[in-house]
Amino acid sequence: MLPDSVLDRIAAELYDYQGSGQSVMEMSHRSPIFMDIFEKTKEHFRKSLSIPDTHEVLFLQGGATTQFAAIPLNLMKESADYAVTGNFSGIAAKEATKYGKIHICADTSDSNHTEIPEQSGINFSENPSYFHYCENNTIYGTQWNYVPTAPTTLVCDMSSNILSKPVDVSKFGMIYAGAQKNMAPAGLTVVIIDKKLAGNQAPSTPMMFNYEQQIKAGSMVNTPSCFPIYVLGLTLDWVDQMGGLAAMEERTRTRANKLYEIIDNSKLFTAPAKVSARSHMNVTFRGTTPELDKQFLEQANKQGLVNLAGHRVVGGMRASIYNAVPTEGVEKLGQLIAMFDK
Ligand code: PMP
Image (tube, rainbow, N blue to C red; front, side, top):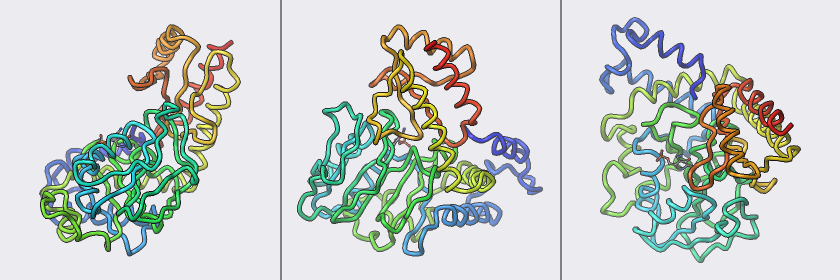
């Protein structure tokens, strides 16, 4: 979802952005009016996440999936370590094997990705160029509740939980995220990268994937996704109105825990994720039978609670309670679970 206030501003400015006579969709990406939107959004993003001067922010395209290839092409000398804790970290690791030696230093497949490795359970290899992990596992509904310590550069996929809490960016060599969960419509991929990591790319690296070149070109090796960048700016205004990322974290945690409490107290539903690994963004749960899940989803749909079916690889239900989902909606879902159980 996008916040209502963001949609309202988009609607109000759609034909004529601030008296310019143009829609943001119609602007030249190099025009002063769009460059102003671009720079202000980037500055605002830096400020919201307290990004240190050591790190650059890039507004790229191709989704988080494109980064699965760009990361090894730019950062891997010979080998890298990957933790596989869900669908996307698995795809990231597989993609990276095309470019070098990948060591799977943790893998939660045996538990069907219902847990997150402990620090002591990560078996780092000798001299990896970086350690890649995905902080929130969108499909399985688990999250790393700590920032792992690694003997190398940390690279983290935060696609499904960025802007849901403050982050100590200085701990990471690189953080990346597709925009379409908590930031803006699809089409924008945000990369936060320690500048000293750029410039070591493989010679075959396509120019669109080349961090050094993108930094030099100010994310404009080609035309950026102007409209989602503009929407990100509006979303950041909304996050400020909500009290910033610390308030967002509190709100996110409270809402998720309330749902887990209701599920834990029910006789019909269970949350498969281990308590210490539960996601605050994607609450996965299931009924005692697939038939019950079907009935629950039908009932939920009738009440306007939509998109609750779990991903096809796991089934059951998944409440993706991203930032813009109103708390009222989360409460309504909780009431439905409790009522259904009764
Ligand atoms: N990583 C995570 C954690 C995701 O949730 C997703 C998308 N659901 C992706 C990567 C893939 O992102 P994209 O579709 O932007 O390539």
